[in-house]
Image 1 (cartoon, rainbow, N blue to C red):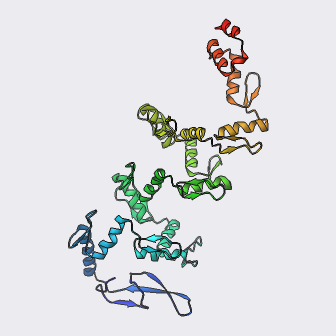
Image 2 (cartoon, rainbow, N blue to C red; image 1 turned 60 degrees about the horizontal axis):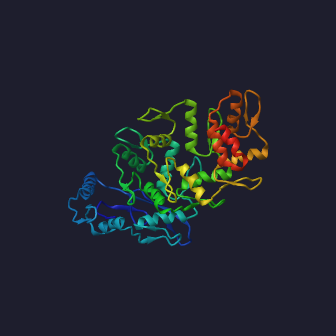
Image 3 (tube, rainbow, N blue to C red; image 1 turned 30 degrees about the vertical axis):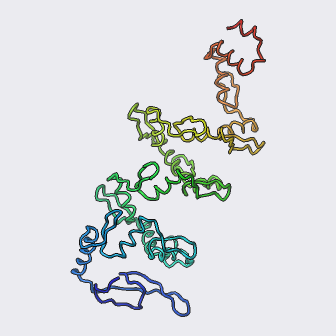
Length: 399
C-alpha cells in the first residue's frame, strides 16, 4: 500500500499494511505471536480522494491502460497485467505443498494458511477453528443470524457479500458465464465448470467404497450416504428419514398437498419442477436424450440410462443371495421376492396372492370376465412366443 494516506502507528513492521489486519510473525524461537496494525489519522478529505480514484478506475477516467479484450481501464500497468491473466487463464503463483495455482500472489498467500495445522481463530460457541479471520467472521454470523448484506430490490438479507451478488442476478436475469460448446448460460462460474463436465465426460469425484465416479461433489456426498446408511433429513410430521435434501423437500409437500408447478398447456400440476419439465416434453415432443448406438430418443434421462444398459449389458443391481444381475433396481426388488416367498399383491375376491402386480391384474380378469385381448390377437401372440406349443389346426379353427 502507499504511505500518502497519513502516518502509521506500527507495533512491528509487517510486509504489507492493511487497516485492522491481523498478521502473524515468528520470533527466533519459532513461537507464534500476533501483531496488530492500526492506521490512524485518516481524514475525510483523504477518504474522498481514495473514493474518487476508485471511481475513476471503474469509469475509465485518468486510466491510460486499457484491456484490449474487454475494454476495462486501469491506472497502473501492473494492474492491467494482472487483469490480463483472467483472460489468458495464466496462474503463475503455485503452492509448493499441493501444487494448486493462482492468478495473484495474495491469493497464494491466503491459500498457504490452509496447510497450517494450527487454527488461529476459534468459535466460542461450537469450537470450530479457522485460519482466516474473514472465514471466522462469516461463520459467527451463522450463530448470530446477522445478515448485513441486503438486496435493494426485495430486501432479502445475506451473511456474505458473494451470496448477495449471486442473488442479484436472479432479478436482472443476467447469466454472464456461457458454455462455449452449447451456448447455455449460467449465473455462477462454478455452475459453468460443473456443466462443462457433461461435455468432457470428466468425473473427478470418486467413491472410495465402490469406485463409482460423479461429475459433482454433492452427488458423491449423497451417494456415500447409501453406503453409510446415514439419513440426515427427517420429517417432523411422520418421522420418515431421507439421505437427500431434495427428496426430503419433495416429501414434505406430500403432507401439505401443495403442487406449485403447473403446466401452461394442460394445467396439470406437479410437486417438483423437474417433473413439470419432463411433462412439458410430452407436449413439445422434445426428446433431449438420444442413444448414439440406435438413435432412439427419450423424454427422461433415467429412461435413456436404462436403455443404454441394454447395449452395454451393464447390470449394476445384483442379488446377494444367488448373484443374478439386473439392469434396473425394480427388477431386483421383484426377484428378491422369489427368495423370501413374499407375495405382496393379494386378490380381494378370493385371497390368492402374487409376487407381481401384473400377475394379480391378470388374475382379476378371471373374476370380472374381462377379455382385453381378442382371441385372434392372443393366439397370434402365443404362436410368436412358442409356435411348437399349438397345433396349426387348433389355431385355424378359432381364427
